[in-house]
Length: 117
Length: 112
Image (cartoon, chains in turn green, yellow):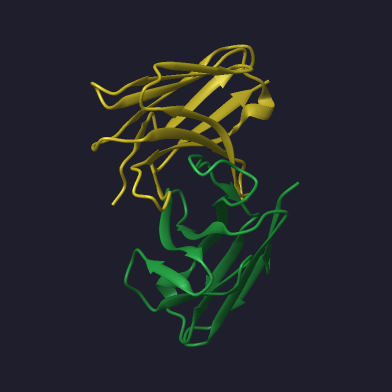
C-alpha cells in the first residue's frame, strides 16, 4: 500500500530563518506531487506541483521554492521566512503506477504546522 | 483563486440527523471531489464524481452534481459524532497535470 510522510510535524522558526520541509511517498512510482498551504480557517492554496524529477510548476509567486531531487521526494524551501509564511503545509500525491492515469484523487500527508515568529 | 465555494460555512446538527453541504464552482470541470479534514490533520479523499455523472453513493455519503448549475451537494445520512470535521469540495479542470482547486470548506459539528 502507499504511504506519504511529512516532517517535521510542527516547526517554530524566527523571521528571516531558512526553511526545509520534506515529503516522501512510498509504494508507488512516478507520482504527481503537490505542496499546499492552508491558513487558519481557510481552504487549501496550491503552491507547487511536480510531474517528474526536476520538474516543478509554481502556482503562486512568493519567497518559497520546491525541489524534487528523487522520484518520491518533494522538498519545500525558503531562504528567509516571512511572518506571512505561517500556516499548515500539506504534501499530497496522485497518479503514479498504482492508479489509472485518468484518476486524480489526491492523497495527503499529515501536514506540518509552521509558525513564524 | 478558489474555484469551489462551500455552503454553509458551518453546520451544527445532532447525531442521527442528515447533513447537507453544497459546493458551487465557476468553470467547466473534468470531475469534482469531496475531502474531509479532521482538525489539524491531512485531508482524506471521500468521493469523486465525474462531469458525466449525476449522482454517486459511498456508504452513508451521497454526492450529486449538476453541471448546468455548476453545483454539487454532499449528503451525509444518519450522522455520527465521528463525522465532525471540515469538508472541502475540489474541482479538477483537466489539463494533463491533475491539479485541484479547493473551496474554503464547511465545518460540520455533530453533537451526541
